[in-house]
Length: 500
Image (cartoon, rainbow, N blue to C red; front, side, top):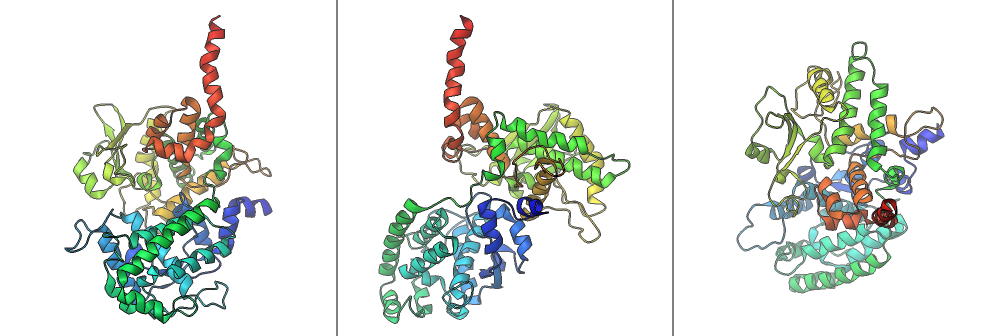
């Protein structure tokens, strides 16, 4: 039971232990109109929803109450400015936010203002700012930022890249010509002094010279970001749960063992139809993940077009911002087609405006498994519930008739597959990979990129597997290549001796 508690439930990494404690203190503010979240989640659910932090070192969202109307309106205006197709006359901007960025920034700003609103004498040790006094205009004061980054450092024990990214967000808001906050001097009228942090003279100065206040913050934040960057530590190592796989000679071959274990333990579909359907779904999660290397969102939202249906056009899929798995009569195989706009990095040089298209290989009976899943198992999972038309669907039950996965439930589904079939349990003998820890779908991209790096030493080829650029692959996965460089060179040199 102790092994289950530490490895499966809370996780045995330092970061997950920190999170288990951190989420007990609820302090953030919510922006329901922007994130779609209007009710607080329990601590256990928050701990499980690690999918939001799969690629970044952040705290879990621990929202307690909705943001006050004034702050919510300001955030809505900021989001409209950063997401509108055309900016309002008189405004200028640099860059545009997508839906994921909006949700991320809203949560990050909600955490910042939630900490400011928390009582100084409580466990959160905030500033005690009344909710009615909260305004985005407070972000022009350097002391506010100094308090916040140091508050996070005290809470975590050290600085991370998270604080650097927040400071750069502040810099973007006050940037000359294109910063939204700089172009909203009227917000200064909402400023109220904060005891010990912002005095009345600073408030008066900001009202008189708003551009000057923005310039001071920009310079201060740039200097602070460089200082913190020099001492920042990595708290969440995204590779830690799958290190046994990444360190193997063939990471894909090692991860493939999980799919084989699912097939070995699959129940009889005639006697246990639901369990068999869930096993089939688990198998295809792993197999499609290994073949496609997609981000969670793209894999989760992948639509299904059965063999007897007419595929959606590229324009239709662009409007939906989703991809589709469908049968290609021309290639006589299952094709995955995803428009570029559906990807997080749609503007990357990898796409250059072209869609992603891949014919799945019929290896190890994959086509037969897809056909069986679509024709037999998927209807069992739906159990009469409304069809979301996605390839992967949840198990519809009497208490849950929504068969569509969201970000958290899809992460949970993947994590459950890993802990059930992948994580080796020394007490029961179940699981196929020793040292593996529960993880989410994003790690499949790490497996693919690392595998190709180990086999070829090419950042460019590795980038093809995960729809990214060689520069990003080198930045994130270069740590797994150095020990293999000599071996790759030796393979070529040893051919001389073999020929002799």
